[in-house]
Amino acid sequence: MRSRWVRLPILLVVLLLLGAAAAIFVGGSKGPKKPEPIPIGDQSYTIALAEHRVEEVMDKYHMPGAAIALIVDQEIIWQGSFGRATIDPESPVADDTVFKMWSLAKPFTAIEIMRLVEEGTIDLDTPIEMYVPDYAIQSRFPDGEPTTIRHILAHRSGLPRSRCLHETRWPAGLDATKSLADSLEECFLTFPTGTRYKYSNAGYDVLGAIIQDKRGQDFRAYMKKQLLVPIGMSNSAFWSTDLPKGSAPGEDRLASGYEFFEGEHYAYEQYDIASVPSGNLYATAGDLANLIRFIFRDGEVNGDHIIGAETLASMFEDQYGRPADPQRMGLGWKIGLVSESEKMVWHDGGPSEGIGSLIAFLPDRKLGLVLMANSTSFDGSVSAPLAIELLEAMLETEYGLVGTEGDPPDHYPVEPVVLQDYQGSYAAFGEIMEVVSDGDRLKASIQGMSFDLEPVAENRFRPNHWLYKLGLVDLLQLPIDLRELEIEFQIGEKAVQDIMVINIGGISYEMCPRYPDLTVDQASWEALAGKYERYGRLPSGSSGLEKLGEIDLTIIDGRLHMSGAIGPVFPIDDETIIILSGPFNGETIAYDRVSGFLYHQGFVYKPV
Image (tube, rainbow, N blue to C red):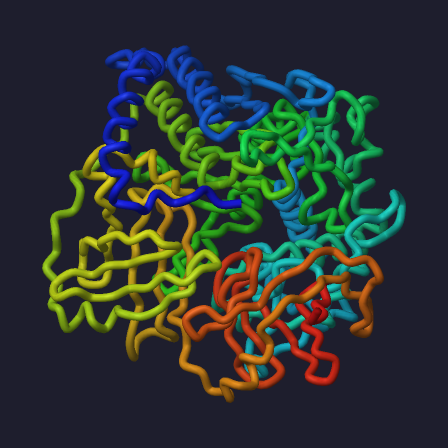
């Protein structure tokens, strides 16, 4: 549910008054005074800053509760609990509150895979068919290279985001891991293997099947006994019934997830999902802090290394980043920078299911933190900048290192003829961004909001909105701060395809293709427009009986759009539609011309 954009110029006077009033009321809430200089080794300022910023974020984004831990080498220097774990009945967040971590399961699956690699049981660069004999997936790219474990760990496999059959909830004890891997035969590869970053839960479910096969034990039971408990995560588990007493769904130690809408909090049920290796981890803030301490000990537990220091370090090295695809990924971990030069290793989880989480650390400096909150608003756009801010404060305190913020780039003159090449419609964040040149200026618009693109190089630009110049940026209520963005155009013969790359604070990148020219008969796909009912997709193309919702296919400005998180789609032939952006970018929607049904991953869409 998106916040409404502030659009109407007639509101300018009101906005100015509101901005002035806001400045008065928040003037006394600027946070703790920073010592100049910060005494080396005294983290009291960082702790005060963390407490202030967490409370500030909770208030701004209507988060019921939050938990945080700050780690310096082997010491948890501070652990904070805020607000409510559940609203009804009301229960406070405590140090032993368990949160559903969702995608933070992936780094643990990656660690166990790397233990198998270290033992010589598997190889990172051997085709996946060697370890999953029944592995199969449909492909539009017959000449692509084989998929390997390294591709999957670094999200360069081209596998779709999620499972390709609908089974989501499984009773405890039912082995779903292999079934999830087998379901890929119902899906299509999204991009040629090794060519594009494509976040894939399905890939990590395949890795879970490999772990289960090689260890000869149920994935969740093995991981609890052989990884979580040894590294000090006894309050954590990959299945709710394996949690300590009082931590299962409906019990008082498990936080509920929430979405805030129109002044009310709406609860999300926290339940076990079939995709255990990619997204079914439960943990406390203290347990995740123990993971960081384990990493800072180079994998040592009670005098023995359960994974080698060199193997761990290899997981934090960029695997495939390059100008045409700048997203940096290690083996199971995302990679970024703090203070312009210090490597930050991190991963987030959620928050669409009502809980967002993040773990981040500086491996070379042995500084780290854990963040979690029970709100759909605590996504990476909120948690990652907060983590960077706190890690920079910790870095300055422990080492006296301060990042140097350079002056904003000067306006870079670009010839109008070059700007004209960048004009077009680009699929971005599940929407269409229109880019037009106006003489010697470039402008963009998305979701009814327009802004200038200020050039900092011939093909790189920074968004600039008039409210920024007035100091009223908060009134835009944008999901992403425009000042954290940089836009790069990769256009022409040297590019694989015409794309616009949106750099989000140097942390993540949205690859936005120019909306292609149609090559199929327009009437054949315009007939698809209408309302569809959604059902679960079962094997052999059959559908479940329970209606799971509805979606709309609409034609907007001559382009086909699918409601929800999918956005603009593009028909490449009479039976195949490609999703262009957002979390499902590159994925295939198959159209059955006889029944009129649409098939996408675990769902069947039936025309009403």
